[in-house]
Length: 94
Picture 1: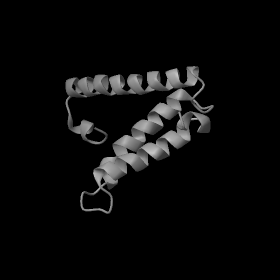
Picture 2: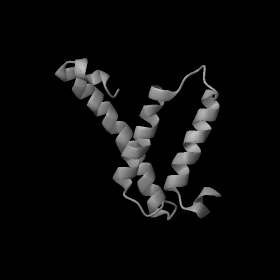
Picture 3: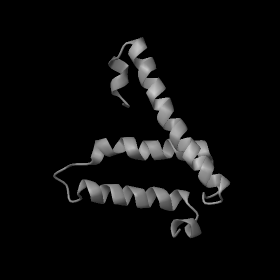
Picture 4: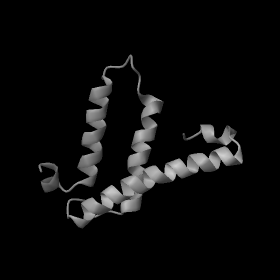
């Protein structure tokens, strides 16, 4: 999704860009709702959206099935890291 689009036709890239926009909008809306409810740290929602996407998309660069962590453990660790950076401490226990 990150590097491979360079080899696509313009029409194919537009289709991928539309799909990317759906994910960006979904995450941004979720963060906006968290911010409205007072659960999000004082941060820029757009920067947080793209940071989360970066964390998710980069997994394919470093995760190895032969590695020390199972997919479930990786998911749990990335979730802890992401939520600790986004949510106010009191919101993480709710």
